[in-house]
Image (cartoon, rainbow, N blue to C red):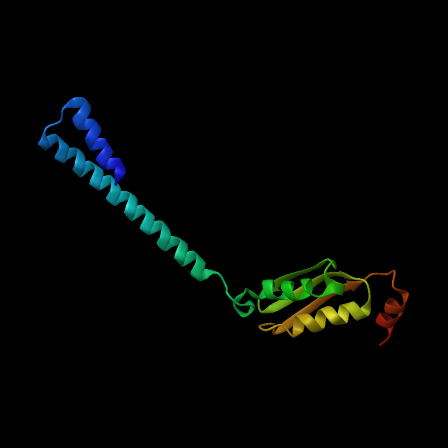
Length: 139
């Protein structure tokens, strides 16, 4: 409250305000303080709502984020260019992996993620892995 009090003091000292003018200045100061307090309360309430909306556990994350996180925490798959998108209730998985074993690992992680019901596999195995290419050709 130093601001309004100091302002009143200056008003009295410099201009020689009478009691009626001092009351007007005080009312203006009180209104300004009330408005600042109201704006602060509104900002705090908005921040609390925003924080409350942040998912607290992985189960609350959107499905694509959960799937992405599972693959990004798996060391052999962390650098694989794998992308996801939803087509209705189907999770479409696209990208490239180095071997059929990594493809299987990625699909196992994806299909075992909470919330994943249907997966469309569009993962490709890099051609440099001759063993995995031969395995892919087998019926």
